[in-house]
Image 1 (tube, rainbow, N blue to C red):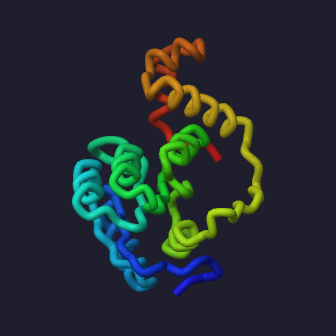
Image 2: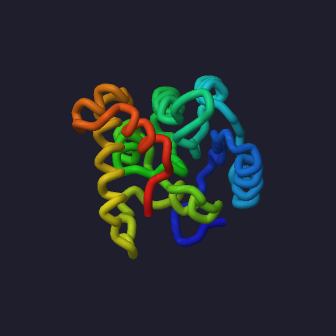
Length: 183
């Protein structure tokens, strides 16, 4: 049932929020095989509704959803059930969003593609566990991108204010924000 981390516990409820339907179904089936009882949602609105009506013990929430930001779901989960263990998933990994996710109560932050083993390990990791150091340090392009993302988060995701603070043209900033992170 586990791979070196804590046991699932009595309450096995798991909310998975992701707008990528095939990934959502695949992860749901994989987590069910690992002993969880998954509930699925494809939008921020559905995730918040489930958080309010059936607060789960565990949750996996995608950061970028079609109807908004997954961090809104994390906040709802923490308000409804403070002991809920939440892992944030994203294809747009950035230090700023990872810090924001942890500040509002997520226990971990995983970059896609994350498999069910990674998710289970994050959900069941002991609180005092520390992640291993990175095998490959960030490139200069990645460090720049991370800095831009951090300032963007600090400006409450306001493109104009972020561009002003970075002394950058607004359109240039929009193009950078629309791209995936560099390696």
